[in-house]
Image 1 (tube, rainbow, N blue to C red):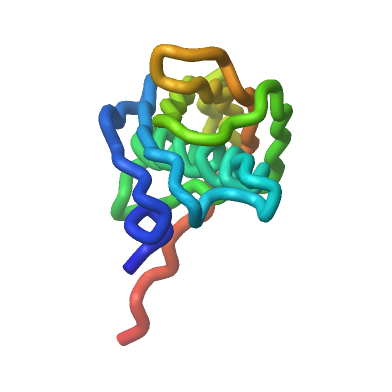
Image 2 (image 1 turned 30 degrees about the vertical axis):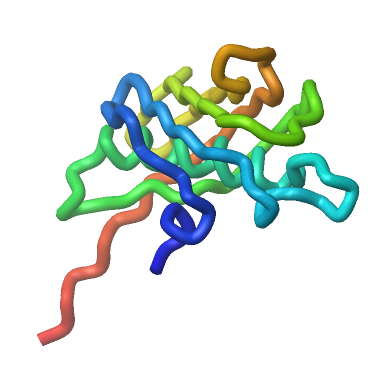
Length: 127
């Protein structure tokens, strides 16, 4: 099982220019105070940005991994469905910078963030 399955994150669209994810907020996503845990915003933003960044790379040669994540929490969430969309600011040979926005479906913007990712070459398998 991976993080997407564990948290119930669904992939709606994945390209090197746009990634859209969806997640229904449940009790497992909340702080003891009944609102969405801020770490979930970080997970959604970095996940969307990472998926997009990896779409821009040759999967058999390299992969992108996050090196910096910035998140601003704008609106408390208690329930409903969250949508996150990520788009690239720059896709370079070694560094990619992406931005993402989260909002409640049919509701307000709840968080924004930026993620910087580095490109790492896959190691060749040992013989």
